Length: 625
Image (cartoon, rainbow, N blue to C red; front, side, top):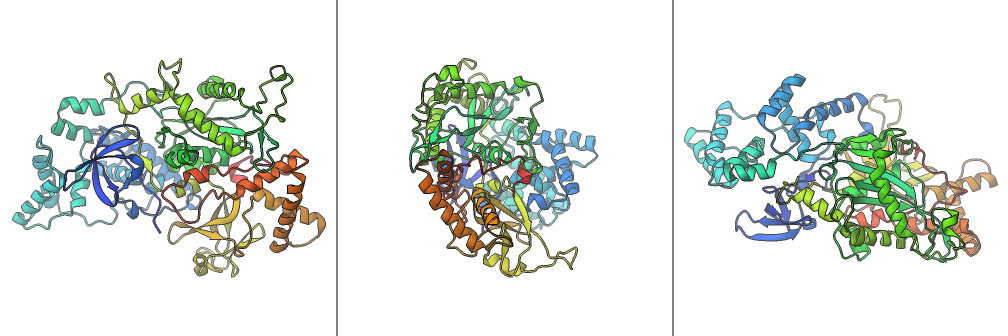
């Protein structure tokens, strides 16, 4: 099973995989394309960024579950990240590292080890105490280290622009002459990567190109002077009545959560559904913003570009309300280096940019059939429910078309250009200012999404894992049946299990030995997919009808009967139609058991419709099981 970790840097000189072969990025040609060069044939190919992946992605190591990490160790990792964070920039020099090391009482080599560990995956867990930054490699002799430094200086740091392969060949020759064992090619590459990128660029390309690539862009937060420097998250109740797919009758107004880049006014991602704002909803919106959108656009057949991905936010600003806060979402953001800042109370201007966008969106929706308008006077005699025609899926498509085809390409009064043009300028630069470059892409979105899902702890019984009276089983559980707690042998060991409340047909079991998640389905695979709300509604109904422990077969039979009642009642009542709509959307699995290259489109569109009388909105992600 491939471990899902790692970041793909989209910078010249980075090694990538394209159709199973190794290439190097020669040039970033646009927000969606790069020019590749083959290391042996020197063949040039311009390809879509979505077609390449990290060369060592299959070798990326598993990551332990965030909830299993003790607070003391996590705080230590965050402290280390805080120390190296100012050094995670282009143009980093040894003087900068040494100064930072002296300031905090560490050696420069220690900081370089932390930097190397973090930059390999972009995860704070690689800075946890006890992890070896050298990955277990043998130490090089001082004589060999001096020789490597000398060869890099005389062979690589020259205007001849020799490849690493040629420099490695020369290094092997000199090692033989001195009776030393030549180091591996990757060892040489790692030593070269320790060198200052700006200095290498200056020596190999000249002062002008070095300045163009590494000059600092002036301005800092909260001025939002470059893409991702100031990202806002907010939500609103949309002024439009939606209808269900089955009967095409009104079911209510949806919520939208938007992730917004202030510098360019680009919509980085969104999540729309009938459930109220919560930590789960916020996490899904962040995941949508951070992952590539190709599959999402293909699902809705949208002919356009939405080149937004990455998590290199300067600051991610969210509403200072309890539905956004929570240990789990905070730790998930910390894991990926997302700097969360809570919007100050009674300081509305901190969210003014995204609120203006949401106002613009509200104006656009006034022309949509089923619009409810913002007040009674504006609505007049318009029958919003009677004119409702859009379903939840229709609205997702409408919003995608509007964002990609209209909003991103329309001149913005505050920018003097369209948001997409401003975004491109900030990343790729123009005649006056260099860009900051494309952000790194997350490789393997499954683990990224899982880190934002709620978790529970359960023991493994002989029958499997039991959650809310439902039994789950897969072969991966066999070796953990009745396993004792390592610290308290008289007590059974509890394991981390995550699930998406929109579909409880599969849980995700964290194997502590593999540091990997595995899908575990219902033990009885004949049961249908259901949401946690539908399941609990069935449990509540049975409690009214009988006392004592409930049998899962009886509960599923009750769900079947409830669905039949709802389908009949959908002809008559809005509340039942909302339950019918929820049932339809739960059949679209948010997380597929078999990992795919990118399941973003199907997963992000899995929306539930929550009945007002039977569903309690999430108040905090940590409380949702």
